[in-house]
Image 1 (cartoon, each protein chain N blue to C red):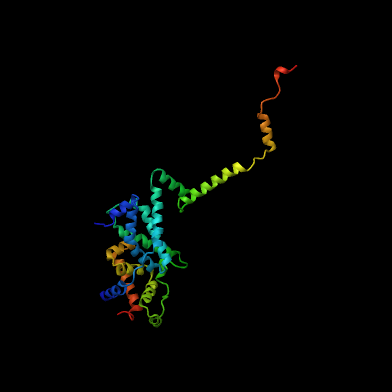
Image 2 (cartoon, chains in turn orange, blue):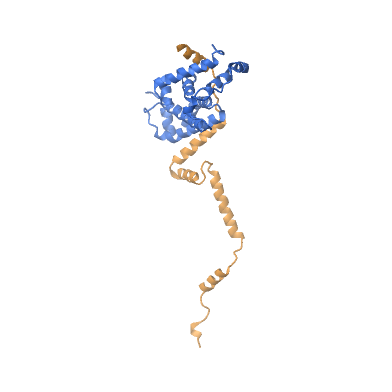
Length: 107
Length: 179
């Protein structure tokens, strides 16, 4: 029994350890940053929580970029696309206008 | 009980990135080695270790010093992540593992591979998961029996039984290679 123990010690002691690559370390630290960000208070913490709710697991610039792009698209569309008046809108405008006849000029 | 990691875990729980980095540098190589030998593949081992660290990051703020040694807890988490992955493998279960036929090559072909490291790897992979875990913790990670039993969540007697069977099985397969 003791012989087996010594034999196994000698056998496995010299097995090489696995080096941890920089990519794995970066992944693990990115997890830490996300977790710490969620826990943080104030604006940074709120933004991190929002980011995780909207788009979990990505850096902050992605949802921020998507929001900025959507805003820009909306504004440009509003500026450059002419608004076509529908029949319904024309009626509504006509009803909103003040009457053009004069009550004092009934004769 | 003195725990060299207590301060680092506390600071990590407070969001200190340098402390988190120091904890990672201290434990990652051993955890990765353990996971690699448990799972047999580098990519899967890296995923298991990343999952284990994720659990550490989320639990660090609630860590209670003195309740358990941090390293023991971390090894236990890593081991559980490895077991989760082994269970997800098609047709695998920890209980059935002991009954699985021996996939190692015959002694003659092992001799032909000539590389002792590969032969040891193959022999380790052929062990049932719990025997492999016990052997790795005690003989490769040089953990004491009490701590290894805590990591595996079993009694010291059960650990010794696993160790005895594991050593016998390894010696039966590799005794001719390394005496």
